[in-house]
Length: 479
Image 1 (cartoon, rainbow, N blue to C red):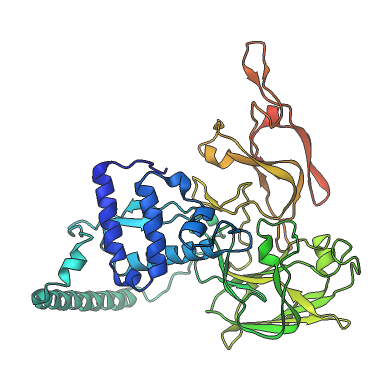
Image 2 (image 1 turned 135 degrees about the vertical axis):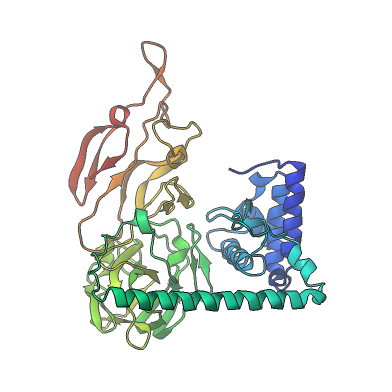
């Protein structure tokens, strides 16, 4: 929780930490990030966290002027994302011994001052200013060298002991026990697979940070095709229409270097040429394309407009269980058919788990969220219709009321991207005593009565909830 007015002693510690970070080599060489971090922290120190907004940062830090548009100019999201990475790198290296650490939580711009993990028993706690003082005492270098030599000798003795113990065990037990089969994949046990993530914005000359705080690089690793820009187009089913204002079109390929492993590929499309809502010419069947990965066909006679259900609609196709070729790259080919060029908006490559698709969690709000069970929720996406609403009154019956502070209401739909297979869908609801345009109705005892919310829910055309009475059953549902 954000503390608006820190105590004087706490504030002094925060200022000391900021001073040391700004004087470090990592930040002396990055004046833009230094200026940004100073601005964010000074606002926090002054208790003005309500003024730390994307627009104010763009105007006051990056001098974008009063006409600054967050939809078309992602400078703030790009630079704050760079700042997060620079802080993480700093505390993993030069600032590893600090007792206090500065962090910018994902989806937020308000800096957080967090205590570092306690040192192991027997080790002295490090002072954040100690590293600065140590550089001024070269006479103690011999002591550090001696300690390093002792540590190295201890490690060698430990390795020798382990090797001796292993050989002794092999002599006593020549038969090797059969290893039990690996347990089925469970995200709650192992979390999302770690590793490098690749995001490429096709046709874009610059990087872009979306509403989820994810950084997309400028177009790279391609051959062939043409970069096309179309900023005037409205794109449905996304909070980031600017994401689809560029594309690569024609006959082209991408050769993307990857480390060994299993990956999940997301290909992002939006038909911006054909369809009655665009030029008035063409429709389904006007653009057909084939997509291959390392020579294997992923999509054949793929029609973006037909798959998305219309022109100007975001479409995401998912392909699990992919791996780089023997040369260490994933080779993607995009070929148009019948004389028409292929079209691609973006490529996203994520570490995967063989035989599984990464879970999809969408929360009806503008920014990402970490729930109490440490799961990451994407900001509202893949939707069409309805409106967002936010409430200040907390709901009961949950240990994570913040999860239910917002909702999408009205007549709406979601098109969630998954690979072919069977899935479990969990729907989260909250019954409230006040509607968006309805005054509370008193019960016989004078208490406010829940608003009548009776509706149907369909999945791929099949009704999974009929005449669902939210006021009576308000709870999570699984299908």
